[in-house]
Each structure stands twice: as structure tokens, then as C-alpha cells.
Amino acid sequence: MQNTTNQNKMAVIPVNKLLLSMGLPIIISMVLQALYNIVDSAFVANMKSNGEAALNALTLAFPMQMFIVAIGIGTGVGANALLARCLGQGDRLGANQTAGNSIFLGGVIYIVFLLFGIFGVKYYIESQSSNPLIVEMGIKYLRICCTLSFGIVFFSVFEKLLQASGHPLCSTIAQISGAVANIILDPIMIYGLFGCPEMGVAGAAYATVIGQWLSAALGLIFHLKFNTEISKKLKYIKPSLKTIRGIYSIGLPAIIAQALMSVMTYGLNIILGSVSEAMVTAYGLYYKLQQFVLFAAFGLRDAITPIVAFGFGMKNRGRVINGMKFGIMYSLIIMVIGTLAAEIFAVPFSQSFGLSGETMSLCVSAMHIISVCFVFAGVSIALQGIFQALDGGVETLIIALGRQFIFILPIAYLLAAAVRSCGAPESVIWVTFPFGELITMLIACSMMKHKYKKISF
Image (cartoon, rainbow, N blue to C red; front, side, top):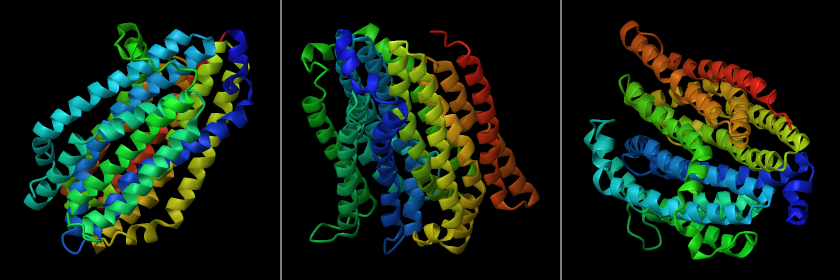
């Protein structure tokens, strides 16, 4: 059993090289996930009529799409870390039950969002807007995405199983295939090309879910073929309370962390909508653009977690420390590049979506002001991955609460009130984000200093 562990590349490859070899495919995969969100927006914004209203409708739908991803990926993150730890300890039974139960949980998650798609979408969209056209488009788009969401849910599970066992390239291939399908189908189904009926926002939704189905199908195929260390017997899908508890003891904080992004965006849609519809549209577009940077950091975080967790399972202090050191360093590099790109290309990025003058100006100012916080966010995100690997669920949750709730919504609310009552410039609301990320980073570093002292093996 020990010999098998030593042959696993997670145990023998130098950590800096392992982080790059695992991290780059995951980063590409995560960036392509961000591409799903921005591609639909790019095409609907350039529809012949009501393009900006359609973009606003997708902005209202976006928090719920993020919530679906949060539940799927959070469950996958828990399975990822638990599976990597079991493999590091040579616990084959635990690894098999972790993989099987994650698939069972994927089925439960899909049923929940299927029911929401049927019964809850209308009330959710109407809570954010009173514009009949925007509400109609939002309901149409989100209902399709929810009722047919099994693709994104199961891909999230298979992606993390492949990453945990050292096959991130497979998950990247699956992600790329789905993204390419989405890009190809979007103009065909939105604009009605090559004999396809013109479906508008509904076409954008169908293109998205078809791409997700393809990714999930390939993820399943790769899992069955390449995860040879894991048994695929159906008996392991039978729910085990112990295994599910183990998955969510790690994954629940990650779910909450991801879900808080949805809560924050939903709350901001309401707060910004109290100022103007242009603010909602501008922030929605900026948020999707910034995800190319943030999702790259999330991708690296998801490589940090199994590497540090594997070293933790082996009780190898050196590999744990190197995973922490190189993880933070590479995160900072990604974020510096992202900041420079946002500052330099803010105008051309915004122009490509055909926005009106006010919305365009607000989107550009958001990119210039908010992107200042990328470096702060990068450190916090890397530390989240490290805390997840070291059973630091509480610390992970605190970071998420700081980044996406405690220091964001209350301050944004106060600044929006100042804009409405005192005539302050609307762009002043964007200052909320650098402030919140800086304070959260300082808190995260303090918690990690305390955690570091407790690594005693």
C-alpha cells in the first residue's frame, strides 16, 4: 500500500512543478467556465433589437447560475480534497466511497434546481426588476438553464474527481469542448443562422446547456477510463452518511464561499437598480469580464487544495509548506497580469458589447477602480485553498464572508444612498470593492499565521 502511494505523482513530483502541471489545465478550465458567462452576454448585447435589455436580463439571471455552479463545485471541492487525502493515505475504500457518493449528490443537486426552474424562476427575476421586457427575457433564459442544469452539475463533480487523482488535463479537454460548442451554437441559435429558428435569449440558454451536457459526458468518459485508482462499482454510489459528512465538512464552506458570490451579486443588482438600470447592466458586464481573472485564481486554488491535502495526508511538512508558498506566489503573478490587462484594455473591452454612452462610461470606470483589488483578492483566494486542504473550513468561510458580504453589501448600500440623496458620482460605489478586499486579505493573513504555527508534524 505504501509503495502505491510513493508511485503517485502527487507524492514525488516537486511541488512547484506539480502546481504548474496541475494548475495550468485547471486555470484554463476555469477561464473557459468564465467564457460560458461572457459569450452569451456578448451575443445577446448585439441582437438587432433590445440588446441592452437582454444583457440586463442575463445579469439578473446570473446570480442563480452562479449558485448552481457554487453547489456543484463546492460539492466537488469537498470530494476533491477528501479523495486526494484518502489516496495519500492509501485508503482505497474511502476513495471509492467518496467518488461514488459525489455522483449521488450530483443527482440530488440537479433535482433541486429542476424544481426551482419549474416553480421559482418567475419570483426570483421579478424581485430584481419591474421592467416587463427585462423580466420576460430573464424568466425565459433562466428557466432553461435551471431545468436543464444536469450538465453543469455533473461536470462539476467529474472535474474535481479527475483533478484529485492527478488528471486535470482531462477535465480541461472536457471544459474546452463544451465552451467551443457554446461559442459555435450561440450565434446560430440566438440570431437564427443556417436554418435554425431565431430564438434570442432562449437560444443563448440552449447553447449554454448543450455545451454543459457535452462537458459532462466527456467528464464521465474520462472518469471511467483514467481514474483507475477508483472503483466504479455501483455499490459505492449508495449514500454513506459518514462519507457525505466528510465531503461537506470540507465542501460546505466552499459552497458557502461560492454561494456568497451569488448573494452578493443578487444584492448588488437590487442596490444598483435603485440608482439606475445602467448601473446594473454596467456592473453585470464588468463582473463577467473580471471573472476571467478571478476564475484563473480559483483554478490555481483548486490545484493548491489537493496538493496541500495530499501532503497533509502523508504528514509531509515540506510539501505542505511548498504548496502554500508557491500557491500564493503564482496567485500574485496571475493577479498582477489581470490588473494590468483591466487597466489597459478597459475601453476596448467595454466597446465590444455595443453599450450606450452612460452604461459604457460606468463599465469603464468599474474596470479602472475595482481591478485595483485583484492582488488583494488573489492572496485571499489562495489562502482559501490552503485552509480547505488543512481542515480550515471556518477560516475559509470567514474569508468568503469578508470578500462577498460583510465588507461589500452594507458599504455599497450606503454609497448608493449617497448617490441618490447627495448627488455623488455613481462611480463612487465601485470603491466598495478595493476596500473590502484589502480588509479581508489582512484578516486572512492573520488567520494563516495562526494556522501555520499549528502544523506540527
